[in-house]
Amino acid sequence: VTIPTLRLNNGVEIPQLGFGTYKLPPAQTRDLVLRAFDAGYRHVDTAQMYRNEREVGQAVSAGGLPRSEVFVTTKLNNAFHAHDDALAAFDRSLDALGTDYVDLFLIHWPVPALGLYPQAWAALEEILASGRARAIGVSNFQPAHLDRILKTGTVVPAVNQVEVHPYLRQDEVRAYGAAHGIVTEAWSPLGRGTVLGDPVIAGVAARHGVTPAQAVLRWHVQRGDVVFPKSATPERIVENADIFGFTLDDADVAAIDALDRDGRTGSHPDTEN
Ligand code: NAD
Image (tube, rainbow, N blue to C red; front, side, top):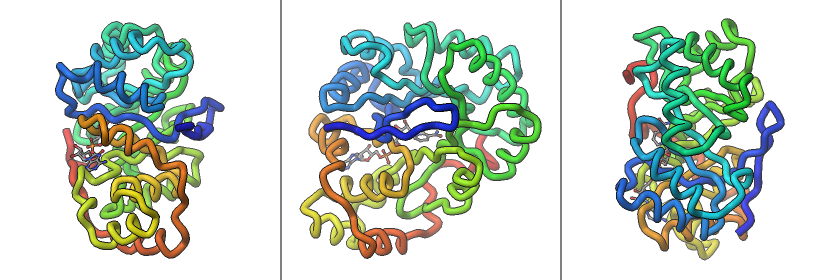
């Protein structure tokens, strides 16, 4: 498979499909990331919170691909928003990953109760300037949080990684991103599996001779978002990357769009801490 790339607002290219690593069994993470590379993935999404940066880094070195051909994202954990803590936490990530730069570094959650995310953003801007992150962005930011860093900061986030799937379309956050040149990354693109039994999705999948997971991932890609489904099953890792050989038509897209509801599976950004 050849995976298309999107161009971020600073010119960096990001593969539109990546491999999610949240809750992968740590003992299997290295091998599963290597399987993903074999299946054609060139983008891995990890985080300090996932406690698997070391295993992800081991796969990146063991995979034998030139470092420049692999796109690695990690995220700042919530306890480290204070400026100096953020810099130190980033150093620990580079050490764990065994690399001298990451492709993308994100603030994982805004944690508005703490109120330190503008400070964390200033630290990420310094990291970007040092060349140790090729791009910086945020995750789980609502428009109000984005407004705040656009005011206090100097760099526009390259991405906002938020929960998006057919049961949570996130039109408002995505429109804000589109208006400001911020790419939306859809986390839990399969709704952690909750959307896969939906009869509408089954119908779209059957019409194209693909699986429900492939139909849903294709819907995301056609909306222009970045996705990184997670699976610990080798066959599904291959299946989830095989989404570039068919196209949903307008009726398929409209049918999936109509499934939107209050289907959040994760924490709400206003309250997560
Ligand atoms: P997901 O939507 O990718 O769903 C994963 C689950 O779907 C799997 O555990 C499996 O049960 C099922 N599945 C996967 N492929 C399948 C297939 N082909 N057929 C049938 N079932 C299949 O959920 P996720 O792991 O929560 O999200 C993906 C990634 O997004 C994470 O691994 C992580 O990298 C990122 N993420 C980020 C945040 C954040 O706050 N920034 C939060 C959650 C997840």
